[in-house]
Amino acid sequence: MKPVVFDSSFLISVAEHPTGWHESITELVGGFEPVALDCVLEELNSISEEAGKRGRFARLAITMAEKFRRVGCGGADVDSEILSYAVANSAMVATIDGEMLRALNRQGVGCVTLHGGRVALA
Image 1: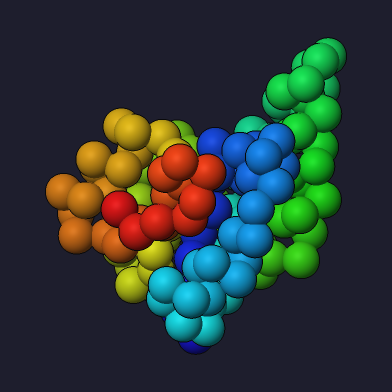
Image 2: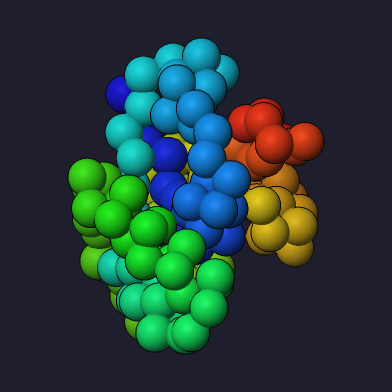
């Protein structure tokens, strides 16, 4: 199974706008293993403390990620940790962050994103 690392932007977005993201990713890449890095979960925990919608959606994202395989981080910034994990493990990354998508594409990392409310390969 192909590992797919999820960043906070993707998780918050699917919490805010529910989609059949799991089924859609399966259709696009075949069987996959969802992965949550500890630093992404820490980022979501920090956001979840905010009042309002963003905090609420971060809490929902954390709940979704509870079923993912968890992997530790090495101490770099979150985006660098995601990129490093993806390269080292031939993983794909699920993100809607444009800057992150460009960095991943430059490194030849496959990406899953949302386009028009639907899951798409980037």
